[in-house]
Length: 134
Ligand code: CMX
Image (cartoon, rainbow, N blue to C red; front, side):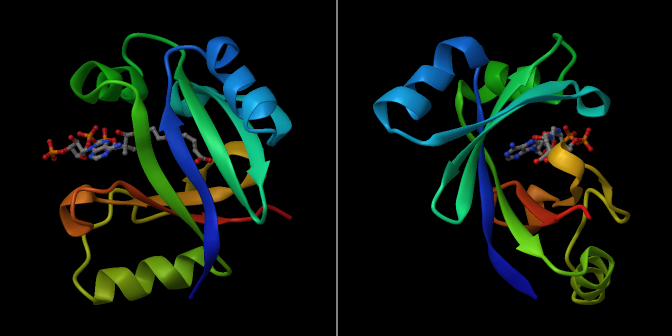
């Protein structure tokens, strides 16, 4: 079961140049920067109500986020839904014929476990399941 929109991922070229808009102009609470080396991105989290905005900066040219920006420009990259039991959710989606990029959870930012649904199964919107870490 999905419990809320956990975050919206936005691809940016530079965290330093983008954070001030969200933190200072929009007044969101800045919750820090973390590198997810495995996925070749640096992420900045900003809290808005019960949800977050996740700014994604590629750490190298081979980063999937660098490729996304090259193809589409900067902008919304994915939507992440919080789930209580990610394995159960993946199993349910697979049983329903949904194509997963990740059939097993991988590590996300801030100790989360995440899995992406293939955009072909989600109308072109990259969709992430996200289970909070303990
Ligand atoms: N929006 C829409 N479509 C996208 C997409 C996006 N953001 N990213 C990739 N796709 C499409 C690709 O174009 C490709 O389509 P085709 O099969 O038609 O060519 C398809 O999805 C698969 O993409 P891929 O790059 O070939 O597949 P990979 O398995 O190598 O990687 C993915 C998929 C989504 C994991 C990777 O592209 C990506 O974005 N990685 C970064 C993930 C990320 O944001 N991590 C950050 C933090 C985690 C957190 O939220 O905590």
